[in-house]
Length: 440
Ligand code: GLU
Image (cartoon, rainbow, N blue to C red; front, side, top):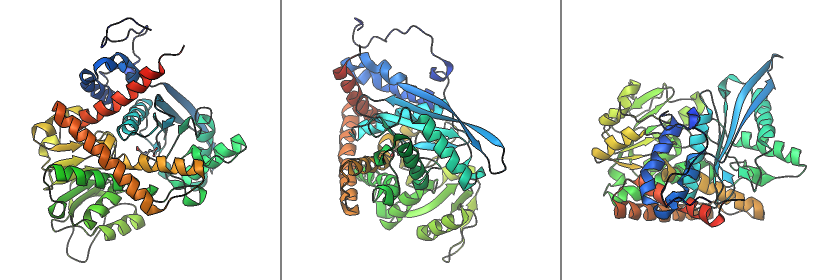
């Protein structure tokens, strides 16, 4: 144990490798800046803050598969356990052509913060494979998933680290992961992943949970700033499991969804898009491109124009680093609800703050998914399954309580909701760290 005074940076025997360097501002650099912003508020616990600045464990795996044409392909996969002070690692697995170790590290760290922010008994972890899954057949995707699961099988498990869906992964992929792990263990281990199909121990309400959480937290935030949802205009980036469901719930609550952007383009209708019809269109055609509705023409906008759309609520629900210094100035919304992980850069955060736009950060706004993952994990352990009403009621209660606590901390310290969420979460993580102490 070091005798350094509280708050003194811990000594380290090696210079940081480039992906741990805060000057290299990818997602991991952004995360490190967020930790720096919170450190002054951690009191004596800041002595342990270095713990948060490096992942506990990071595994890089080669994932070789035989393609349908008989040739061999190799993909790079990762599983990073950022922190396990409060419980087993928990976080999704993403399949995307741009996945890097540094990105997965940041995503795993944001899981630590998110899980602690809503007080789930989990640490943070994340996984990914650098692959464009759209280029693979179903058989190739299954072989890729199974080989990846087998490779990371040495560090995952129901009490060690529990993967779940993320970008481009779904219930079927979770079923293959659960089966592969179970076959290797010689026992059915349904608690090894969440987001499974219902027939394999999945939970009611899990698929909609992230979008429902975005809506619930958005409702709470709207109330605090006196924004009437029934009069609100909403713009959504990403129309998958998160953005699509959030848009549906906002529309059901009386809001007008005026703009939606996805990989197929940007569509706009001032009087409101027909969200259920748009969901059907996306299900059938894979993107918002070509959407038409009976009530009149739908405009197509250039993608860059999305950010300047006249709206009250902006929901980035796609990938990281979408709201940047280059477009934050154009945003007209009264609040931004981060459905995606890491969609706003720190410079953009500051610009939005100066403009008086409330940012509801990812680490609370999209915590609904992992909250119902927690319910799924608990249900699997007890082999007793809850009703959807039960799940949604508990989800809403947890998110509302967490949001109220964070709002109070933000008001007390006069900081952004992001810094407030980090204060709450990092204090919980580092308190557990301190209580457990250093081994040996
Ligand atoms: N991938 C989701 C997230 O980023 C859910 C993770 C989980 O359920 O473990 O929060």
